[in-house]
Image (cartoon, rainbow, N blue to C red):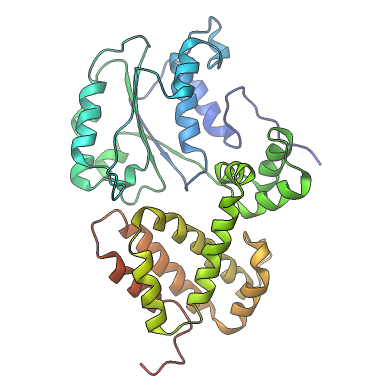
Length: 340
């Protein structure tokens, strides 16, 4: 079986098409002023943005070797200490990206670079910005200062203004193949074959998550607890589910990751219910998944998937989180036996 070999030297794995597209733009001098990198959490958006930023400001004599990873600029970007790299501050309580934080970065990016070719701003979780906050970018996108680039990172484009997406080059990162993740975990991170195979299956195509899980066992423990909470919830009546909603509603920042995990559970359940040959992502939960596939219909599962997705999209807004969770739980299957 052939192993994965990157087609470039950038420190980005599994997204060769995106890297090669950016390298071609760099070689031809066709640099856009704004890039919107889209993809699920931990899929590699931040890694790709920083690799391109390093290539743009690398000082290696051979342009084809940029980023070299060894020059002062590359090392400063990797350490987070480069004076021409700008990052916004997020609300410490809600994780929201507020309008003043965006305006502060825009004022900074309008200045000439201190020591690099480009001043670069990277906005992670740009979907956390309200429409009014996103508007703060428009003037800069319409009249970009010279030698300045903006990277916007988001899981999807639905929550972003069309005026933002139309003024940016969109790169949509796809899930990385499981065998590619397995090879990388073994060959680049020293994982034993069995563990590499397990994490590759569980990652859902998110290389970043697989690397973190390899280095930190607590991620797998948190994942197990998240799925157990969902499985317990499906056994409970409304009162029990509302009690869970009350607890989850107190921590908005961690809820997005939890819901994304639950969405993979519903996807696996639908695959089983429909007899699909597509392998499940959460193969270690096969017993409870098979049990639920007996009692829950495809319509039940699709309704739960839609409810979960709707709440994930609502998290960017100032909502009554507990109430929104209760509404979602009412759309989860398992309540038919109650006398409503």
